Image (cartoon, rainbow, N blue to C red; front, side, top):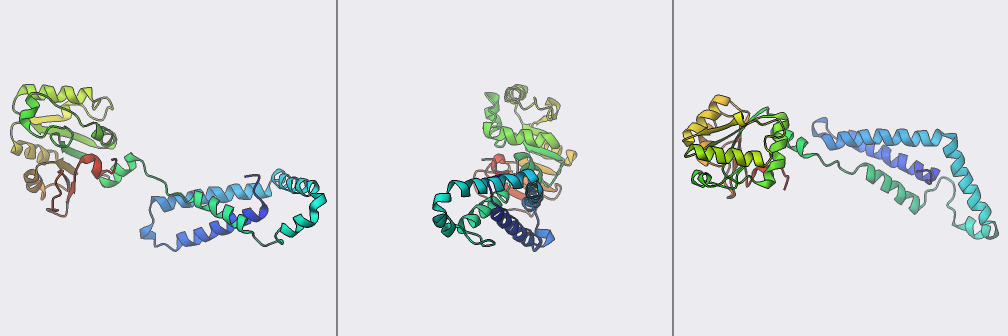
Length: 269
């Protein structure tokens, strides 16, 4: 930053001012976290530039550098003077460097996965979620009698949900052995290590209606399921639902969202 000239600093401030005026011309309802972050970065940048300009050390450094340059080129002063832009007139190079500084400051800030999860769930605090076809690779209860495989791609999203939501997982199983297989698979995948999800919040039932009953009793803000019939039955009781299906389906209700997978709904893949 010490190598930038006064003219370049002037151009940076000028372009930052234009950015401020553009930002404040946006209707308040349209402001988002990117614009707020840009204003914060702008304030820091202007303060830093102001400190640099008023600092005696910073000014002397620029003056010494300029004097050293002119002394070293004394023998070719005529050529040098011809190439120096008049005072108060910015050169294309100054404009380019100043614009680069401004552009870097206004690079959009990419939200974290946790921020995306909270935003997509509309700050909901309780979530119920089916296991088959959403958390597990398997899609039928019969498969759980032999194995249960947690999707590696869904783990990060699942753990982010548990950080700020009361999450309940549930599934229909055919026997007690299936329950044990599912719990072991979840434990091996590290689902219970974050502290947000415990084994007591993994619920099992013998019918699809039993799962619907669990959901209605828990009264979550969101329910996530891969069975369209369950989604349809719960649409008038649950605030929001996510229907997970690899096949594109039409939206059945205003409060029902569709996605090929849980992780794709949150844009993590």
